[in-house]
Amino acid sequence: MDNNFGVALIRAFSQSDYKEPAEPLGIEALAAMLHLYDFDFRLYDRETDSQDKVVTEILAFKPQVIGVSVMMEDNTPDALRLISRLRTGLPDAVFVAGGLFVTTNFEKARARFPSYCKLIVGEGEVPLLRLCCELSGKKVNLPEKNILHPNQWPWLYRHNLDTYLKESAPINMRASRGCPGRCRFCATPSMPDGLNKWVARDISDVVDEMELLCKTYQPHAFNFVDDDFGPISRVEELTAELKKRNMHCALVMQLRADAVVNTPNLYSRMAELNKNGLCRVFIGLESFDGETLRWFNKLLDPYKTIEAFHVIKNAGVIVHIGYILWHPLATEETVRREAEILRKNGFFTTKIVMGKLRLFPGCGIQLEHPEANYIDFPPGLENYYNAVAKKIAPIYDAWLVGALYVPGQYCRAWLEKGGDAGNIVSEIEFLLSQLDELSFSVLMDIDSVSDDNINKTAAKVKERLYELGCTFNRRR
Image: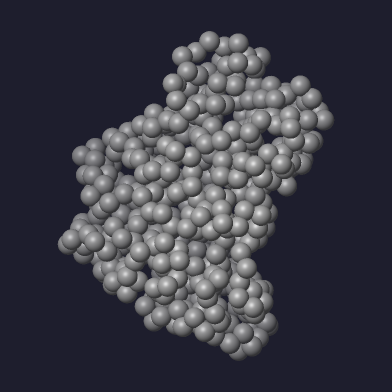
């Protein structure tokens, strides 16, 4: 390792009020490439450390290259303050920014970042490596293309995984890139060529990485962060490989709604997958309204999809759904009607009440409104949303404490065949259901629940969740 040439990699802080904790996979992927080619580097996460601490440590490190990951536009204020402060102390350092916001909104990013800051579009592993080789004079055989096939990804460099596992979340894994869907609220279809198609990583390579992680970390619980893990047959391929290696792992992943709806023998296959480790799936439904689904470019029969969700739940796999309750086609009447349908089917949650259409960088809707940071809602609906969101803020704050803890507990319960984790899951679900009922009441009639009742219930539930071992604090 060349200790005379250093690289600092930073995940910028998100200003979102409703963010959730996550391992910084972006800078861990960059670090993996630098590690592979024997560069000296250090990782800094503004979601866990103060700006003063990060700046102090980087100034002491004295790196030649400072890279900042900017996933959303609301990461840019923190990124710009970091760059300004570090530039004062390290005037000769080369500054680089990349991430989803830079890739999908390059012109806006170029206007916001100083001219001396280099911007990287697309995957940063190879461009950053090339830059470091040019600056350091190091001679290596560089990959031919800037975009790596998932089979070429170095395994993530997880120097501080224990910090994130303290939230009791599963270990995050990457098994593919992209998505075959063309949803207008998603950034993936607008990504540069080579990044906007679904491409799978070989299951054998995925399990090789899982096997290494299992030697160091407990529990053996894994969350696949892919936009789409793939068809049910690919999940079966994964569990078969785990079984072949005698690996007892619990799994959480995201699947596409149309894939499960069109899967033959869904119940028996899901029951077998649950037997072999699949604990929980996230699936986007987004709306019950046909016109809205067409506007989203999401071609689903929502009622057939809900039927499939019930089949999956009856097979033993927990289903968590994505839903965009608030959008330009919505009205107060449709919001309440759809909430009632979700509640009747057992899929209503407090998070769904917060499910407002967001303009992700590069999504189809955002590209139609390039100067907008948000999209206009019908008269009165924005005010209604803001009033509801403000009213249930204490509920949502408490809800997150349990909701972000429970996926890991589903995995533990599967690994332990019930046990204490199973009892904890049951109690957390009961506590969350209390919050969900309050949120539903507020949505139906904002004046039906007093602020005092909300605050007392939220405080009581949060206190009990902390007693059960939940550790998440959104304001940490």
